[in-house]
Image 1 (cartoon, one colour):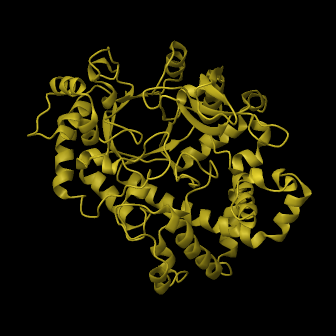
Image 2: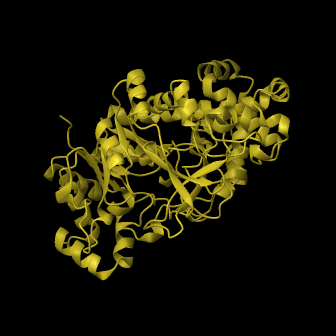
Image 3: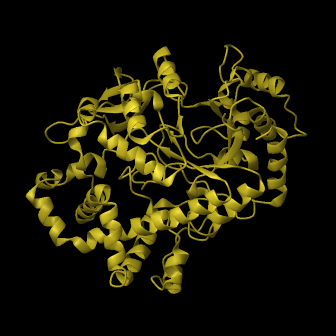
Length: 492
């Protein structure tokens, strides 16, 4: 029988620290200590991949590589690979409560390049061993990033034709002549995984599990599509024929046009879903539990013609369904996977999730429209579920309270017995904790009672997302004690 537990949703980028963005340094270890004091057994994060245009952790240059922004610079300082003076001359952001991705792109990457130049001679054998160990994905990725740098960072679809084909003579010649540039990206991944695994072990030693997050799709501008174009629906010029998104819904009247290439599921089935099995295996190398975003896309996905202005004119196309998950189970055994099953769901999607046995998600913010019956109300839950007050795509609870219709707020107030004395955010948290769902995850912003200034993302918008950071003094013993008491009260 699964044990009831609870945890906190807090992305690495949002951790406090001195270097412009949360990282794997001191602030991360202090957060683990806070989780332990608060009697929390789960730490949920967003995807750890490299962010590109738009800064979204759900659009990465690789489904396997880690984000260089999360590398702890203090370790490179202590090893003499970076000088203190360089940190002063290359600022990483002035606002401690907001990430400036533009400055990080310029200055943190420059700092990492300088560190690499100093480390290259002494670390050759370590980097080579790491490269050989991870070559199945790292070769394509390092080569992709090196060619990208040589073409001033433009998308690979705008490279000369002879570089678009990973198997071309031009690409092999480039690989031979640019080993040092490729190894810069090997160096970054070496430190990323070294530091992340150390942090994860620290959390695991305190009986805290890491819940990772993987997007269902990969970015168009990624080493995944460049290196495996036959596994995607692309034309002879490698351009996506159709792209992913979702139809109009409560979030957007014109739907969400994500623009990700669509998988060629027939080709994937022919090779035994090799790419997906490798992706899931790699994910469980670095996480204890994996949440798969947009899970309904495995049953049927919304496909839109490439070049469309919005996602209104698309069509539902059948996905691989249980064939993929049977193969994953056959190759990797039973895994702790969370199915993100929010949005428009058909009976077939419910059947797929039921057959996998994976828990789905319940979001309290969606529960309180009094005009309709809601299966997001806690009395309707089953045990095999994960309950949230909100996700990274929602308003914070205190933001929601200020913008929601008055009848929804009245319904929520009566149902949860909300009071200003307790705190509206704490009433919502209590409602989630008291539910029968095996797992309860609360965003850090809701524990802190923050408004929409701390919101992580507004779907279908670009700019000013993914930037929130916590203040350095908010992880207090008083807050940890309060969370721990609630956790004990509800047997989590």
